[in-house]
Length: 291
Ligand SMILES: Nc1ncnc2c1ncn2[C@@H]1O[C@H](COP(=O)(O)OP(=O)(O)OP(=O)(O)O)[C@@H](O)[C@H]1O
Ligand SMILES: [Mg+2]
Image (cartoon, rainbow, N blue to C red; front, side, top):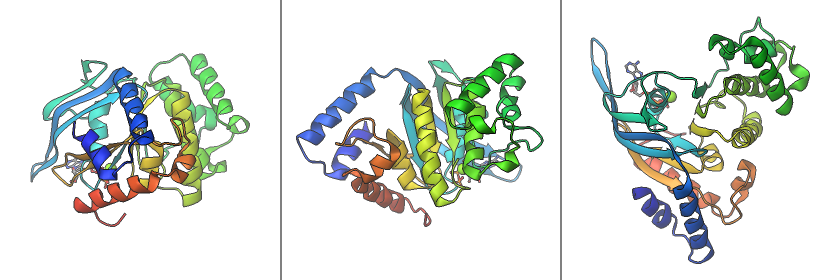
């Protein structure tokens, strides 16, 4: 697959230690069970006035528990790709499967986290995190118990009965993530979840969200315009081309410093800047407006 060549040659990796690390990563990848698969996926939007070809020929396999980051020019079709995985949209070409079954509509298996938290101001924090589960007809007491447990575990135990307006932007996004987790999805789709926040908050929150997702062993697909975020959170970074968009490059993110680094440690790791420069150049080649 192209990504192996891109990953290895694009960064001019050193032999020896780096190569061993890469082999280890490759073995791990093979051991991973396939969770999501896109096969020759294309998507055209039709409106009475025009037709827009957003995606063309996307083939992709995502392993269970893998964290994928997606970067690409504005309007290339990143959100569209997430909508296809969520089942909100059906591809006009090709197939999307989850656990080997073709995606035919939305399901509880998939949770979404968006740029805006969409919390209900008239409900307290607990009321907000249980709302999705209630809609899905999970028992009210079960949803409440699960919500309380997650809020406590992830540092919001003192805010269970606060109103959303009493929380900071970062806390609100954490509540939004917990609301998604209460419904117990296997897959989390994150569409620019930190972009409405200030820089310091997004650094802290990306650290926390990463820890929560890994702790819960979810498969995650993150769309972001922030390349540092993509590299420091993803096991793999996909670079999409401009429209009609396809996957222009893919990089396994592997660091000599270890397998289980936090996003913050990855930002300090020796190969981080190589990844950044290579992907930045690829984005530039694909005509991305300034990030
Ligand atoms: N419902 C729709 N009907 C028609 N065209 C659409 C629709 N939704 C998206 N598009 C078009 O499809 C293309 C891809 O849109 P999409 O929102 O997936 O891009 P994106 O990569 O997420 O962009 P951004 O980075 O700005 O969020 C765009 O040209 C957009 O105008
Ligand atoms: Mg988008």
